[in-house]
View 1: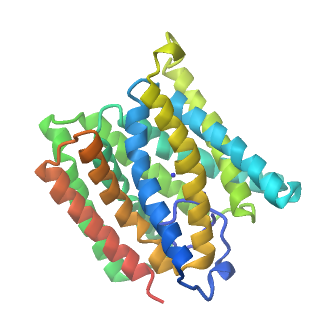
View 2: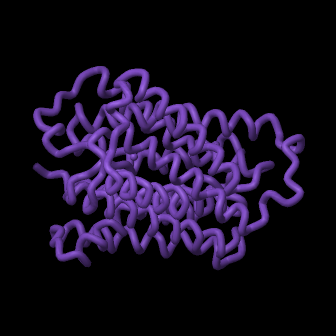
Length: 319
């Protein structure tokens, strides 16, 4: 779960696509294929994370994922576009590193930690709140989103209240639910900051630097938590290794490439629909593969959050 957004882009999780590249969008068969890739692959990452942390420490696994993915993407950019595509100023590199730490250590890292005790479907529904926090950050910075956007935020926040019921009732650990919510706030802060600070122009180079910074950053809380003590790679299950490889290749590389291409090619109103499709995919996969229970708070709260995000996206994307 990175291209630069215009200040009004409240849903994109990655940074580096200039606004002028988004003009004259064209919907084609390739667009629908790429959109399906983003829907399914990003929606399935929550399932992959849940399987990884069955036998891998959370921050160590996240660090390994993003370091490997960042190195692979760096090599891919150098091969396809030349080393010139990787050239950035110190200020741009610092900005990309800052955003990477917020997105991948604070955002994704906390979600990975939470999924040691929170079902993948519930985590995905909580993460769907990201556009709401971005709207509030925009409002706090002096921007004035439409009233309907605030209505969507209020609706989504009501859904979050319902989604915390499993934690309050003891069905899942409340600390895990709150950890996911904290992660969404930090992810939103990183997304918002990426539109305010100087980022590299190349979206793929930007993502590579973010992944490397985020991956290395994940090692710090891993060491603080002592995840390396008593860690034995021989105890990692085969399914966890497969899930980690899936997250690296399909979650971090294939899906990102499809998403970055969509930002250049397709209408933003269409691309932004991933924000409320991914959680649905995650819930379905969690129920089918991991037999995660669809309790009434998860079903009702998830529906309310998705409805709120739908209102935000549809309002913000009216051209």
